[in-house]
Image (cartoon, rainbow, N blue to C red; front, side):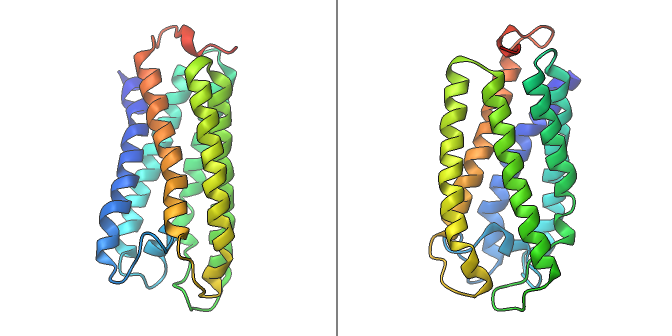
Length: 212
């Protein structure tokens, strides 16, 4: 039962983050989910910062709990165990986000902005590594699905990165919000599918997730 609860935290974390991106922007007049990044919702001076931060902490705790559940069901699948370790690392590192906020566009670039960029890069690399480990841990359709997810993640991550430097310059970023949200959604959906696969398996001795 504990394993199932912890695994379900993965689904809950993804659904919470998606809901945050749907409803919170409404509290930021003039904000565009298409042309502005997710981080701008929690930027210094943003009217939505006070709402985003506590919900972001809840998301982080749920995702970290999922990591422990993933470790409990990994058994002898060392690739899945590595994915679990990376998920927990992701959760621990994400606790630093409130202390590394970016500034709103047009403000002077500071140390916290540099920290924010660094955390963003680390987070994206961890997401990618988690999906790689998941792809290696399974066979058949989930491996194919994971590979396709990785390709989409890299594609939209690249598109986001192309426009990202213009934020500090307060330049135009017509599609950065859309590209970034698709990039994040690919990972969130992958987590949900992974949890469903694990919940449908036999946790006591799941043959579908043994190391190959």
